[in-house]
Length: 291
Ligand SMILES: [Zn+2]
Picture 1 (cartoon, helix red, strand yellow):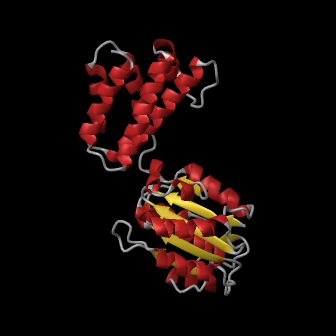
Picture 2: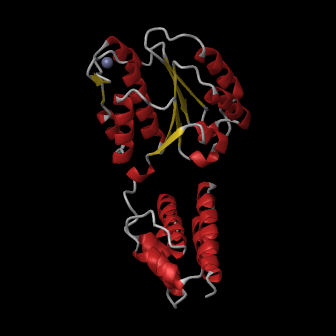
Picture 3: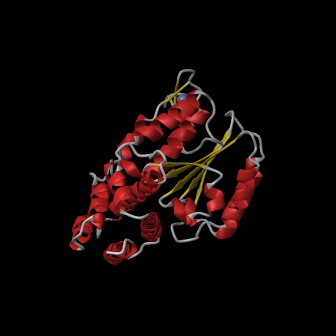
């Protein structure tokens, strides 16, 4: 059985890695019982609805076919085995009562399809109590239930919840790569001129998506530099910047720089002021390496 995700592209390109993971798991009938799609709300919701439709579709070859009675009901939002829950939009507006209702439904046998699908849209809006209630369900899920969570920002979820779902990020769709900016930052960090790092990070100041992507990459490069310093094998394919940093900086400096960068990365998700954050990171990084 083949999964067809073409419809999702209308809300933005789906990263090839996400498409492949979903298609393979679906065709082999081993979709993880809980998936978390991270990315823009419209795109993640559309992806959830498409996967839900595929799970109830009756076409023997390609799902969702869009033509069978189950697909039509799913498209109309009236399929009895697909339920969509979500907050009203405000922070923590997704209450534990909704999860309690979902828990009752989860143990009821599917009506028509082989499984029941629960879409939890905007999961980061779940109250802590709601997340804890969901956690119990994720720990011992009924066999015939599929959970599809969406979130703009999965780091706002309890780590215990995130650890029990398979997380697929659609973020890189909007930003395929940072154009080598993370590597240039690392070269600039080791350069003698203090202004080099400020200069390289200027494009990041007001672009949150770019801050996320670049800091993710920058942290990965620092981790690679640490690994190279201890004689290990790096993870990233391009090792120029990491190798240079491994030669130039001490283990302690690299470690401090990594900690600072990881902290800054988390602050981006907590809506920190971009220009302040990046400028403070640059100063902190220079301090960390003793320059
Ligand atoms: Zn169908």
